[in-house]
Image (tube, rainbow, N blue to C red):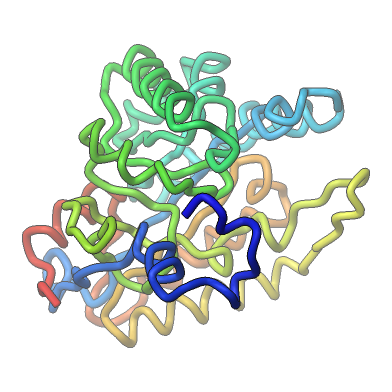
Length: 302
């Protein structure tokens, strides 16, 4: 309706709020009885390698914040790769194309170590600010850039800042992307629906409660100071993991190389992995694309 912006939401006719809700919706749940090798719990670790793109997206004015982004490359990713190698587990990295072009060798090391790289925008742009044509162009450019750098074409997508536009799902279908990890309509994997139609695209739920950024990020010029003691963050993540284990579900954890790898924080991830490995019944650590393949083949079609 062209005049909807002239009236208040409480004045909308029923078909309008139903239309808005149905644009992107959680469909059938894809939850297996057991995970690979009979494991009780699946753990999917993700790292958003934003590096300098957070500041570049906003104009690149702060040298300080660009340096913080560079920390993610110089210290963060190497520290993460060493930790993953120590525990012999895989992970998924979501990489803006500009990050990949700034640091191509970093991405090649990630792939060579057996990890996955997924799409995370061109320059960490906000999709809701883009026209459909611009969003499509940036997705295609990002796909091509990541494939050129790594030799592998990504199959997964995470929208920058979890900013999923009303056109994003349609574009993912057009481009043949098999899964998304930007939305949080469930604790378990599910199939995305668009206007009531099943899309075949799997959602691996992302949630801010399982994201390091909300507990540690700060921005001195915006008055942003949400610092949480690392021990408290570990407790939150562990409680999420314990509940997922009890339910036999999925524990997806999102981190950022420039955030989680400070000396006072990297222990959170190390201890969480060590703890998970002690759980009876077994735990399956898997890349996001491996989770998607497994739930499509074994998930209960609810």
